[in-house]
Structures are given as structure tokens and as C-alpha cells.
Image 1 (cartoon, helix red, strand yellow):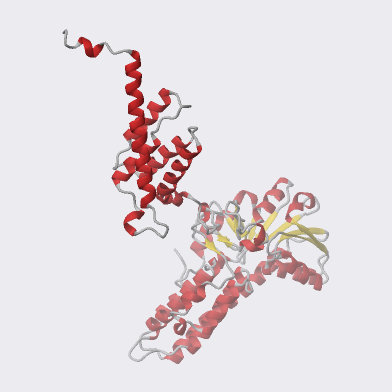
Image 2: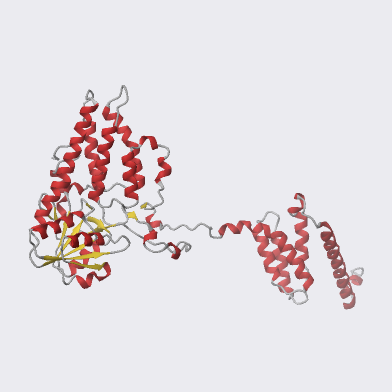
Length: 487
């Protein structure tokens, strides 16, 4: 115990002297390390070995940052030392960067600021990991809710797929696909007629290969053309029903039939389908709809429908005294075509936009609408905006008549406009300069909407004037795609 007393009894001055000596030695070691580090940096570009810091050098750089500052409290200094001590060579480079950023906030003199800046510059290349979080340069204008829908574009994207099988697609189908894509052929009736005409021309130009049957070889020959049309624009319900009907007759051809007889039979089937299902059905609908038009009526219609135009024109030629209100909407303004054709036939017309529907509906006595398809659950699929017209008419107690041929009836069931629809070209909604560079703005342009059966008074067909809920009955009674009646 007596030997330990001299060591314990140190004066305060001796303790302070030892501390000053330790500090001086520590500063000398730091200066030597800095001089060595500066001498290692050449003027030219560093060699590959010097680009990455070795673990030993990283420890020295951290020691340089640990230098005590006169302005920093002891508690903050000890806390920073603990943070640096916790960083091991196995930790990611992102943690080291965060530590250095915290230490740069401490006040220090100019020389030490330069040292810390140099060290940050050396470790900064590790920030490439964080650079992945930055937004990409490409602007993607697509709403996730409508990713499954067909996107309409005028850039002729289907031509890339066409180059592979260009020899197998008939020029008539190529022409028809371009007309659909560029909106030259619009409307379910017009598209179905153009499809059947292209199919008839393809049948007349088809040659059966040797040692093969006409039906099987023609079905293989028609496959690439159907795929091309689907890439141009999805099939309408009218086109799908016509395609099923014709292909059933192709499969029923005898094996020993000649090419001339097969072509003649298929052409007769196509001509009969066009005459019965489109022309005669439209004529019967015109007669039934004209009986519902009285003198002095104000007929309101929306957009353009070839069947509605035919009804109004023939009713005027039958000396019916009425006027027409044409409601139109952006971006296609199809009502202008309806207005132009009715005015040429001296029909009195009024043209308004969709926003004025509630104002103009007070003058209307009946509403005539066309249809893209009639679904099995009674919903009417038509041009986008038709459901709004029917809703306003229901509010004002105006009867709504939908004119639709039975070949547009389908077994498909749909209750909204999201499951199946088509997206129009966004450039038609608003100029691309206003939204193309804004990744958070996407113009939405839906082609069709769905109207509920409670908003429709009746559906005028070639069979009779029926309620919307009678679609399953019509599908069961009419001849199906197999050429026979359902039982």
C-alpha cells in the first residue's frame, strides 16, 4: 500500500501536463498522416489501385474527422466517436456517407473544412446506389387502372409485326386495318361491312395448296390477317359475330369440293349475311321507329349513327314533321357528320355540345340512340357519353329508344366501362405540348360507355320493340353462328 501512494498523489499541474503532451503527440501524428496523404495524390489521373480506398486508409480518414474541436461540447464529441466506432468495414457505404454528413455540420476552422470536403469527395462515388431512386427520364403516360385496355395510336405500330408475315396477309386486310386505325372507317355497321368485303376478296384470290383441303388451308391462311386486324384495333361485337358465322360455314365445306364451288358458296353466304342481318334488319328497324315519331316531335340524338340517320331521313321523306337536336362531344365530334347529312336532306336541326344536355333536354320529346352492342345482362354499350344522355332523359321523363340490330347482341356480360373498352388517342383530347412533359398528367379518352337497363325505355330491333332484358331470349331464338336455331 505504501508503494502505490506516490503514484496516486499527483498534482493537478502534472495531470494537465500529461494531457497536453498527449494532445501534442496526437496532432503531430495527424499532420504526418495528412502530409503522407497529399504526397500520394499525383497530378495526373490516379491508377486503378488508388481509385478505391483500402480499409486501413478508411480508418485513417475517420480518425482525421475525430479531431476535437474547441467549440464542440464533450458530450457531442463522445457521441460522434461512438458513431464512428460502430462503422465497421462490413457496413454498407451508405451508412458511412451519413456519418460524414453529420460531422460536417460541426463548426471548425477552414483547414479542417477542406479536409472533410476532400474526404466526402472520395467517398461520394458510393452514392450511385441512391441515384437509382431518382425519377427516370422517360415519361410514361399510362394509368394502371386501364393498363389492360387497347391503346389507340396513329403511329402505325402494327406495321412492325406486319413485316414478318406481310406475304401472308391479303392487301384488302392491310387496307382495312389502316382505315380502322386512322378512324377512316368508324361505326360497328361500317366496320362489319368493310370486314366482310375484305374477306370476300380474300376468298376469291385464295388458291388451295396441293394435297390440302380448302377449309383447313383457308383457315390457316386467314389467321395472320385476323391477328393483324386485332393489332390495328380490337374486333367489334358485330365483326366477331360475322367472323364466327362465316368460319362455321368454312368448316362445314365437304372435303372433295373444288375451289370454284367452295368460293361460290362462301361468297353467297357472305352476301346473304350482309343482306339479311344488316340491310333488311335496318329497313325493318326504320319502319318500326318511324311509327313512334309523331308530327311536332323534337328528336334528340347523340353523336353519329348510320341507323339513326337512316331512320330520320326516311321519316322526313314520309312527310313527318319533326326537328332534331344533335348533341356532340369532344374529341371526335361525330355529331357534325350527322348534322351535315341531315341538313343536306332539309331536316331542321339544332347542334349543341354535351355540356348543354340538361338545358336542351327540356325541349326534347324523344331520344334516339345508336348502340355498339347489346350485352346479355341488358346493358347497352355505346359511344362514350350515351349513358349521360340517358340519365338526363330519365330525369326529365323523356323516353329513350335504342336502335340496334340483333346481330350486335352478344353473350358477354359487363357492368362498367373499365373491364372492356378502348382508349382513344390522348393527343386528340388536348395538345401534347401541355401534358407530354408532365409525368403526373395523363389525358383519359374512353371510346365506349355502358348504360344500365333502367335508363332505357325500349330497344328497337328487326324482330320487334323489346325491353333490354330480352337479350337472352333473342340469343336463344335467332339463328346462331352454327346456322341453326338454339333450343
